[in-house]
Image 1 (spheres, rainbow, N blue to C red):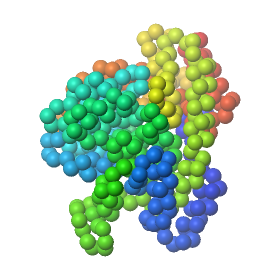
Image 2 (image 1 turned 60 degrees about the vertical axis):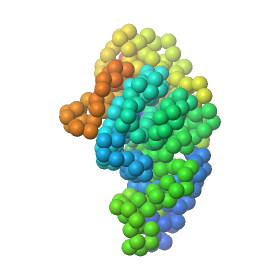
Image 3 (image 1 turned 180 degrees about the vertical axis):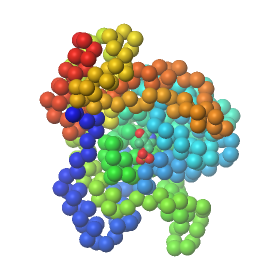
Image 4 (image 1 turned 90 degrees about the horizontal axis):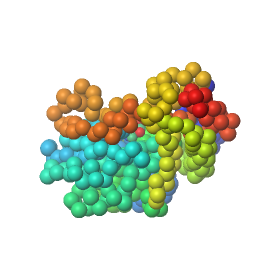
Length: 366
Ligand SMILES: *Cc1c(COP(=O)(O)O)cnc(C)c1O
């Protein structure tokens, strides 16, 4: 079986974890501070604040945007449910703007049309490893004086015109087990604003600056030193891992280039892709349906995934939710029916990549 994601930590991670265990400091401490510093440098942001997962990173980032009841956050309908749950947890109303099918991210024109008098924050999702079209999105945000929170959970290290995804506004990241860089569970918020970084540090620690000095009603969103120890060594090798993912994506694209009914992912001009997922669209011209292709690949031992089978609003619990505005997003709905992610991770061998190519070619009869 070729899995869609693999977690393998090296000896450096083992050694650092042992160091933490022997130190007796298992909760948040110097390892977290070190992870934050190195993470900020990788993203190209002034500050990074570690939290316990990517969802709480989103909640905390939204909370420092000072939302009031009735305020709306406009986001992508084609995302992991955490994006929506965080908006609701932060007390805001979620509204969606459709995506484009060439980058699977917010369509800047649809975004501009969705912004209204109650909009307070724009929340683009940098999906699959490629940033949204920030060159067109940031001007919309600025024109309306809105907040900007970037869901960068899948796109650590990606860039737009050389600038790191997650460094345009408040960047939020996930270090969950399947992400490009992982601490098992974990999250990070990046910002260039020292005041916001300070508020986030207080917020994650029960609203407490010094012991029993409470400034705001806060949370326990702390990451532990044991988790940070697993992440630090991965930062050093991150560039090499992304390069391996890029090579794998290029091999997949070369091998699958001429298959009818298969639309391959592309790196958009000015943007760099870190290939968290390699996602094709199985169109109506294909000899098999998307779901038949999933079944055939699974049968042949090739792991694949459908991220995501439905738009995020397309569930009863959100359709009926008073703070979810589910305007239709036809592009996202079609992409949800057509998308299929193939293994592209950095632990794949060249042989395995070729096996993925052959399995797809056989399945679609090419
Ligand atoms: C993984 C992910 C999250 C949430 O991260 P957790 O660490 O699992 O809480 C949020 N948004 C997107 C797009 C993700 O892929």
